[in-house]
Amino acid sequence: MVGFDMASNATKASLPSAKNSANSILNLVQGDPTVFEPYWRDQGDKCTLVISGDDLMSYYSDYGNICWFLQPQLAEAIRNIHRDVGNAVVNGRHIVIGTGSTQLFQAALYALSSPAGPEPVTVVSSAPYYSRYPEEIEFLSSRLYKWGGDANTFDKDGPYIEVVNSPNNPDGGSRHAVVNRRGGRLIHDFAYYWPHYAPITAAADHDIMLFTLSKCTGHAGSRIGWAIVKDIEVAKKMIKFVEFNSLGVCKDSQLRTAKILETISNEFSNLGSTKTGNFFEYGQRLMAERWRKLREVIKRSKVFSLPKYPKEYCNFFGEFMESHPAFAWLQSNGSMDAEILLRTHKMMVKGGKCFGVDPKYARVSVVGREEDFNLFLERLSAII
Ligand code: PMP
Image (cartoon, rainbow, N blue to C red):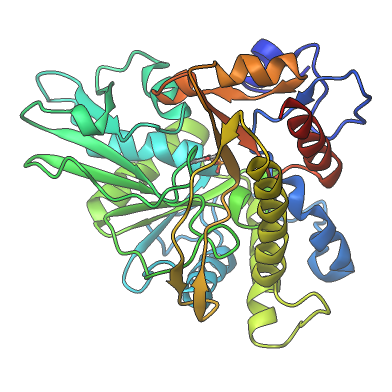
């Protein structure tokens, strides 16, 4: 059984990276970040963790922290990785841990809405927006919040929440809040604000910033996300949500996450330097190479085009660089439905409509395993 929204249309398709034959459908729907597996394989025992039968049994992690289910070594590792990378301000901020940033997104919606409000608060995001925002917002028909669509066309008075996803899934663009009206609250989703995907132009400093291990190191299966929160009352409400929703966050996963993040931080302090350079150097090289190959194919195409990303100064690498997003945002020239077109060539992707835009667009994952990426290029070349 294939998980989440793959299930609806992927039952006959191969799982990403399952051995693909010439006739199998290549599943490029989800951004399952298996691209980084070889790096972690090369680390050998550095990230191995032994957990004995009597370890980590209590619900509690840290009685002294408002986020009582956050393991102190993970809190420390999170603060260190942000200081190393320079992508977010952590000093004086609260860290809230969650089962993926998916849980924290809902915790943030809960924290920013009011049960006493006369009607549900409207949540908007600039199109093309991450397709899960409307799905997660509408799922439980909440009395607290409702989906309001594209932030660019939102013109109602009163309270609202804008979700800013930067770099943006699906199109990889750099984003800022667009509504900017009184009564607005912001959630910044920084799942992809890491040096292997985009230049780190500043240390972000917003009210609620969501990050996820899934897209940072590729360990999506550990289901760890974190929020960096300015206001203690907002942090407390988010913590309450996680408490009622899952009574804390798996400690085994937290310790594994701490170990993985510490391994990267050690690379910066030269305690664990490797032949491949630090993780972000490796990841940036790999993503840049994939994008180079993809743009080669698209250059010869009369059917598809890709967005261009401006070179910006990356404080982390100390040079001007382009973005190399986790997804390719393909646009079919003319008015062809890109998802259908790719489907007829045995590639399963997500069409523009899911992201609130025209079906001439489609989102294609470029963070899968090497063999899937190469097969994607091969099949894409055949359409041209
Ligand atoms: N935000 C964005 C923009 C994402 O692309 C994803 C993962 N696809 C998430 C949040 C959720 O990540 P997690 O695995 O931490 O739940």
